[in-house]
Length: 556
Ligand SMILES: Cc1ncc(COP(=O)(O)O)c(C=O)c1O
Image 1 (cartoon, rainbow, N blue to C red):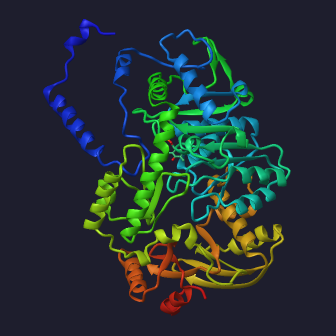
Image 2 (tube, helix red, strand yellow):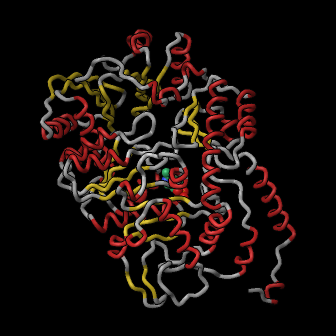
Image 3 (cartoon, rainbow, N blue to C red):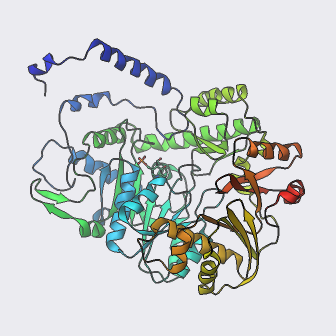
C-alpha cells in the first residue's frame, strides 16, 4: 500500500542518524543477551512483505469477520499445533494468539472468574508478577502460597490453605517454569489435593510462558498439560519460538470460553478474545517457525539448550559460585555477580541470586565470555557467605527446635494483640506465652502458641489478604486490623537484629560474619521504621551466629 503522496514526507538527516545510532546499539546489545528467555536466532525476512498491509486479527480466529486483511487461517494452524503440544482435546479446546504471557494469564483467570466469581485464586510466591496484576484487574480474592527454596509451590501449604477454605471453589494458578528459578509446580499433586479434599469444583490455570515450549520436547516430563487436568494454559511466542514481536498463545476449554463470548455487530463476529485489534503478523511468525524449524527442530534445540545450561552450571561451580538448575529447565541460578557483569549481560537478579537462561543463541563460548567477565570482576562477597546458597534446594534445613514460637515485628498498634489472638482463637490455636520489646518506633512480640506452623500460616495469610483488599472486601475483623499495620510474622527460630537504617550497617554486620567464618543462609529486611530496620539472619551454624550477635539479638 504505497502512495506517491507519501514521498513528500521524509525523515530529517538528524533523525535518520538517530535511527542508525539506535540500530548500532541494538546490534551490540543483542550480542550479550543472557538473562532473558528470548531466542535470538531467527530469520523472518520472507515475511517482511506483509508489513506493507494493515493486517489485523480482530475477533475470534475461528469465525468469519467482515475485516478480511487477517491471518486467522494461519492463527488456527498455530493453535492446532499447540493443541497437540499440550495434549488438548481438539474438539473441546479453543485458543487464540495473544500479545504475550501476561494476556494469556489474564484470559485464563478471566474464564476462571466467570466460572467461579466467588472463587479464591491460589498462586505461589514465585509466580510471575503478572498474576498479581491480573488478580487486581479482575478483583479476584486470592491467597499467596509459600514457595520452597527451589521455587516450586509449597504443596503442604497449599493443602492446608485449601483445607481451611473448602467451601469456596479453588482457582489454582500453577507455574510451569518460574521466571527466576525455572521451577515447575507439581500439577499431579495439586490434582491429588483436590481429590483428597473432595474439591470437585475447581479451576487450574497453567502459566507456562517458557516451560510450555520446553516440556513437550523432553523425555518423560512431569504432568503439566491438559492430560494432567489443567483448564487453561498460557505460553509465550517470543521466548523459545523466537518471534521478534511479543506474542503468546492461550488455550482453554471451549465450554468456559462460550460463557464469555459476546456478539459484536460491527465486526460481524463473536468477541471471544481479550483485546480488540490483535496482531496478524505474530501468528505468521509463529506459523513460519513451525513450518521451518518444525517440531522435529525443537526436539533437537531444547535438549541442546539444557546441555548448554549444564555446561554453565559446571563452569560457574568451578568459579566457586553456587549454581544449579532444575532438570526441566534451561534457567541456571547462581550467586549474583557484580553490577558491572549483570549490566553487561542483562542478567535478571532477585535479591542475591541471578540467573542466566540457555536459549538457542547461547553457546558454550557465549557462557565462557560471561565467565571471563566474572573472573575479571569477582563479587565482593566470597561464596561461603553468599546468599544464593540459601536458594539451593539441598541446603535448606531447620535451625533448632523452637517450634512453638512466632515473632511479630513491625509498627506498634494497641489493637494488634487482641486481633492476633482473635484470628488464632478462631483456628483453635491458643497463645500460651508472650514477651514484647520495643523496636525503634515499633515493637517485636514473641508468642508461644500451640501450633506454630498453622499460626504462621494464618497470620501471614490474613496480613496478606488484608493488605491486598484493605477495607474494600468483607474481611473479618482480624484481617481488617492487620491490613492497617506494617507487620511481619516469622517463626521463633528467626534471629532478629535491629540496625540503624543507613548505608553500610548491613555490610558491616555481614563482614563480621565473614571474619568469624559464619556462613549465612539468608538475610531478610523484615521491617523498616523511621530510622531503624529489623533484619532477619539465618545461618547453617546458628549457634555461632547467636554467639556473634549475643546481646544484639532483638528478642531472645
Ligand atoms: C512465568 C512467566 N509468566 C508470565 C510471563 C509474562 O510474559 P509476557 O512478558 O510475555 O507478558 C513471564 C515473562 O517472563 C514469565 O516468566
